[in-house]
Image 1 (cartoon, rainbow, N blue to C red):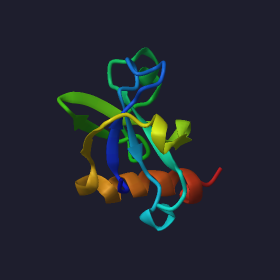
Image 2 (cartoon, helix red, strand yellow; image 1 turned 90 degrees about the vertical axis):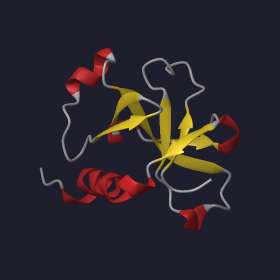
Image 3 (cartoon, rainbow, N blue to C red; image 1 turned 180 degrees about the vertical axis):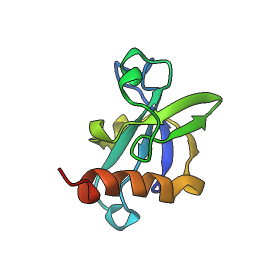
Image 4 (cartoon, rainbow, N blue to C red; image 1 turned 135 degrees about the vertical axis):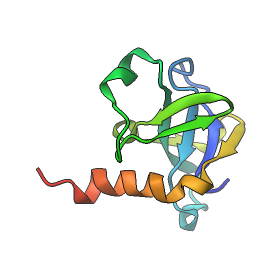
Length: 108
């Protein structure tokens, strides 16, 4: 399990949030949990409040258009993650930039 791997969401909101992307560094692979960010369907009702931007980039996973929601990051036990659906390694800097924007660059 690597950083930017995409797993199917097995939780109750899996229709609106079909995937979770691992954002945790591989340095912490010995921990039995993974920090993930939800990848919401662009068509989900609450996705309308998240316009595509540097903080909420869009991706296509398994043919589904999704948007990263860094405001709903969570820690999930490895055993609770669904099967791997792919990865977003080619978009790692985009994801890292979004998280950096949320946690360190936004001045308010």
